[in-house]
Length: 424
Image (cartoon, rainbow, N blue to C red; front, side, top):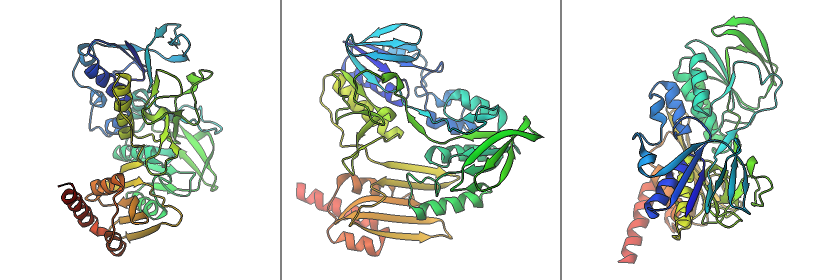
């Protein structure tokens, strides 16, 4: 049996290792599109901070790890998949045959349609190559404008701030991290970031970028025109305006695709012997039962294991992709889980301590906790995830939590004890 894995990020690596564990004699080929060893994009901010070197981003630190596993590593770009003859065509014309195929090609940055976006000094922050360019340009005291304050943007924001730059963040949405935080939590994060010396413009677009009149630390500056009427001259622009699944090469394959590859609970696509995992998938959401692109690394890791087990002939199913975000923004830890936006007819309770930058909001459907958002609180993270994933009926504990959300641990322990007594 020959397994071909497109993508050597966290999903691809975990899938290769899982298949090898269950199929010691099968052939495994893993394709990566970048020249570096398999690495984690989530580690790039730590590289920019100077906390790690490039090899600290590598997913496996042992030299020859994949060779020892007898996993063939190839470098190249997949340009087409032909399900009829079960082959993958690469950009150099090479063809790879497969018996079972895993598509784990991840995401790629969205390039905003802004006049001047191609000028020198404008970079995404997605690859090690990007990180090297930013390291050279983001010097202490340099003026940096970052477009985007979503999840990825806030991670990059922290890395840039650690380099002692003069940072301005522009977010076109009405608040920071709008796709993972409630209004109350987002407002708290914005206040926190501004208190650390970062200028934040929400509900604001970059309308145009032109060559600046000044000379900056890296040479000529860039002039940025904003939709709020302001103009800013900067030395460097970071584009963090979001990502989308890397699936263009699957055109005309017959694989069912919407925003991402449609997969079932076994991570199977609509075609035989083709699986998908990670950011490229549009899988079934745990909380709503609807399809969603859930581009977070824990989700990619879980999907990779499930896909690999089924590719190996075992039976494994996902419970659904749980919306789960944990973010460190300049030292303020925030998180959201499950159906954090709430549902029609549901109940919620919200606590805000603006002076201490603490926030907690719980969302209920009936007496079941279905979602939560928090800032400045870390002791409840595991409990929140556990209560939401188990869909436990809280009974009278719901009213206790509506009165005092900080009793989460008490509720969790009480329900766990009741479950243990019932099983015994």
